[in-house]
Length: 336
Ligand code: SF4
Image 1 (cartoon, helix red, strand yellow):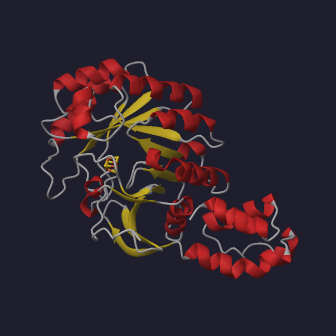
Image 2: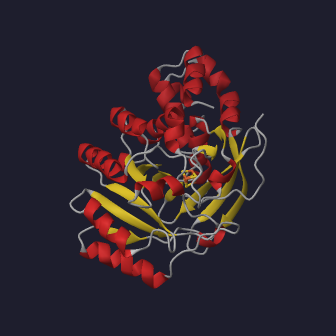
């Protein structure tokens, strides 16, 4: 389930790095491995050519679309079944975006999220992450990939970085169009700057109060919000991409004037963009979204205070496809 395993298999058959790159490029762009110009032209070793049908079969067995749920706003939620029967969700977003899942379940346990309720069931392998992109590309173009589906990418860093590297190098996706979304983990700030492909970074802030954050995100690393913003700012300046702060708007919890003042204090002058995301109501969870006028007023306030802010209604709300709040409708499968 790792891309590296596929590479090793090719090397064992005598493939050179250029052959590996070519075959991976075919796969990640949803083209047949044997397609394109004649194989002989690329000097693929005979053993690799003989093995191509088996390699292609193994790659397509990684994941399949179990069901698809289109929404009126152009989003489409895909329930993706992995080879062991576990399921994850991907969301095709308007304007050629795709939201992928990095884990089955999640250990962070954000109290407003359905994904976190059952804890972590298993990691999603790097090849399974890329397979979500391949399945999406079989339906429509994908030019942006955001890691905002099920799971915390920082808890599956090796697989996520391997997938990001392939998508950025062979997958034709601009590095800035790969968005690593995290609640904030010190390992992220160490690893991301070292990778050959540096993605954009989205940080889930949700509140400016350390204690409230610990209650909302009970198993997120205990980083003070101000320290998190400092780390984010360093990464933004190093890469030249603004940090996207995510703020799930919960009525009566983090939509007060006190929070707005503190956000303005934290983010004024920072290379950042604030995304206010009205909560996507989930049956069985006691949270509500503020009304539309309050949400719009909050965005206006922050913009007036010099914090570039967008109000983002999650794509595919009516199909439960709000990123970060995805919910598997099928019961979680036991891990084998
Ligand atoms: Fe995990 Fe994201 Fe859900 Fe939090 S919001 S529990 S980090 S999937």
